[in-house]
Image 1 (cartoon, rainbow, N blue to C red):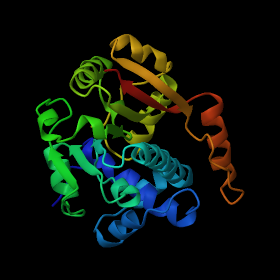
Image 2: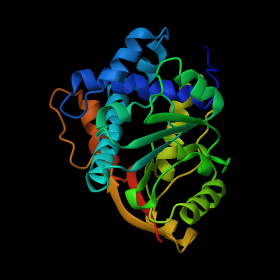
Image 3: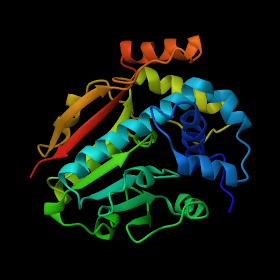
Length: 271
């Protein structure tokens, strides 16, 4: 199975590379055994990705995965039989790190992305794929869950690629269909989105332009009376800066939080 490298879906290879390479060197932040195994087994040349994203890029991917892991673990501590929906899953491996033996997990992504995923990661009875666009609301019916068991939506590095108007309509629909549910995702500032676009273009990918940004998360509450911001946290909060990292990496980690380039946003859909 091949994938069009001039597409948004191709960006699933970048965080996979980041989690595999950076987690081997920083297991105290995250150790992604499955990503390491996939990288070792798949015939993809990551030379250009490694050259473009470097050490800081890898660190940013394992920190994002760690924050999502922590959020999922906290949620399933309260809701051990919860349903988790991973929006724009790509080659994400979170399930293998957080599974408690009773959660139900769905990986939502475009059909060609899911086809590529399934050549590398096999579905299991509690870890299934939905091959549909986020904006094809028929996927709502594919998610089987009990309201009392809780439902959490996670999304990593995905919302950037959509227009605000598209996301506003989708989140309104999700809030209506999944009252009591929660959503955790990462967001960039407008300044950071501009930088990201230039970085991705350096890899030769012209089909993955980013649009959506969040400067003030409270604005999201104006989208619907059913949307509440639970929290907004700076990207590297709580992550110790290693003296082993390159000076440029240490500087970027501090700068990103100082000028609020990246953040994590946690929403709840009110009942």
